[in-house]
Length: 157
Image (cartoon, rainbow, N blue to C red; front, side, top):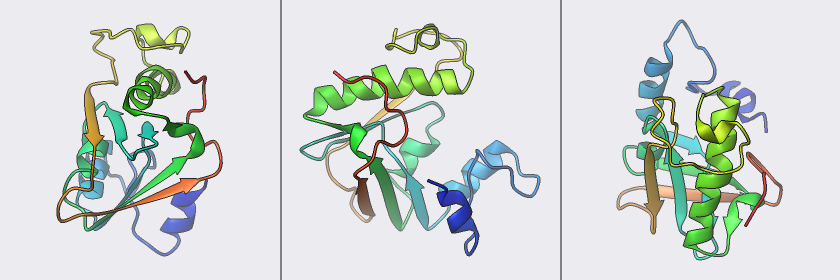
């Protein structure tokens, strides 16, 4: 979507995917965790509003739980699922394997990027699971649902 370029033109933006002023990825994650506003997406969203995220280091999932004045979740229509179980299935069997493959991880799910094998690999990226039933107290979370397929499209169940 080009949001990093658009936002960084007039704001200080921290992303561990974009090197900045000699900062390490750990320093960038820490700086992002201290920002007033946090922008992310999700791995699955049920039609009744449950937000499901799986993460490797916890920086993204923790930032949807605490510490920011405002959180924006930009979500493509392909991440919508009828219920909790199907949203969780999508997170584990579409987003996880495709992200592990994108990162070049050596895990069972990257060979076919077809499903989660619930592996114990040291390179596993599916390490934390967060389900948001409602917005945490003291935080504002805005969901921006986009009528496009964004992120990992893959197959659906």
